[in-house]
Image 1 (cartoon, rainbow, N blue to C red):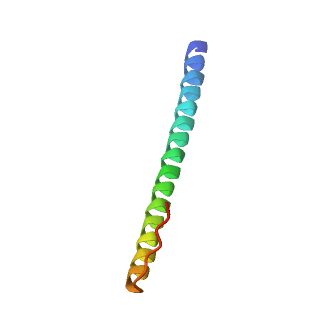
Image 2: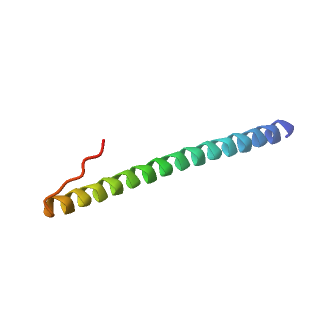
Image 3: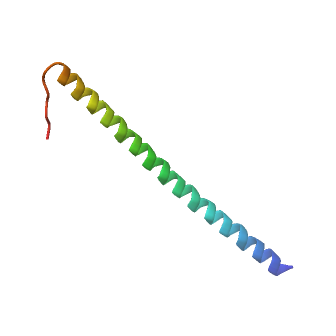
Length: 63
């Protein structure tokens, strides 16, 4: 019976570690998606700015 208890405790600990790793990975994926979304929003804003400048017959180029 003692071996079963040790095996169960080991399985619980392994499961806990697996869950913590999965949570950390999911967190990194979500942050990466958030960053990509922000970059896309910035590109859209820049395109809108350029379109507005072109409509006024001027363009501001920044390097």
